[in-house]
Amino acid sequence: MSKNIFLFSGQGSQYPGMGKELLALYPTAEAIYECAGDVLGMDLKRLCFEGTEEQLAQTKVSQPAIFTTSLVALEAMKQNGITFEAVAGHSLGEYAAMVAAGVVTMEDGYRLIKHRAAAMQECAEQQDGAMCAVLGMEAEEIAKVCESVDGYVVPVNYNSPAQTAVAGETAAIEQATAKFAELGKKCVRLAVSAAFHSKLMQPAADAFLPSIQDIPFSKPTVNFYSNVTGGVLTDFSDMPHYLAKHLVSPVRFVDEMNGMNQAGFEYFIELGPNKVLTGLVKKTLKGSNAYNVENEKTLQKLLEKMNG
Image (cartoon, rainbow, N blue to C red):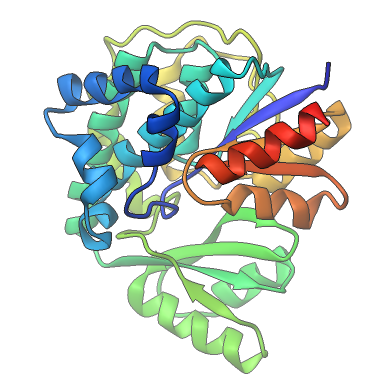
């Protein structure tokens, strides 16, 4: 038996039609969409399959839509008997990871997402924040450029040795982007509506925390890698505070990947729309077996490799 870790996609990886092929293959996943509708009061299946890019880009839609598609891919893994020894998620992805590891039920996962997306959407509408990914530059050098800019901009997502995302006030982001361009470095604006994982999200964290106090959390059944600590999370005694802190803390994904590598995982399997995390793993851990599962083709590719 191979040693597998399941990775779960973050915000920005959504696209129209996501999850449709997997649901056709595994009708048992219909229960996931029904649960989403019951908790959220929206037709998430229709939004995932028929929604426009603009509709799906709204935080209150994209977060539950990506979460749902990740759970549908997880169902495909279960139906094929593919087991896992650990989980990790990138930002929003930690919520699907919590469901996979038994930290929360699927219903409570949707409740968490409902409150999180609402708090983040409201915060985004009341501020002028943005994010961009800086390519081909050391994180320490990126931090120095951010410090030299008027206004607030900071590194927040340590995605790979060659990619760090910065977040801050839109004007400060534009200044930083110009400075990176002068240094010959490429910046890519991210399709998000606010400065996620920065102090600008503190109003969202403050609104989110009291809304999730009554949700029960359990210890995970497998190791759970944390964006906040950059390693395996060991303290699950106060998850509401952890999740509120998560909103304003950097995503230490490079540290997580290095820890996973040291733990000896053979297959890194990304569940959810697109293959952002698969790309980050391949760039960071050379020669690793990284696969994404989002449709029939990607699922077959993984199954052929694992059964070969």
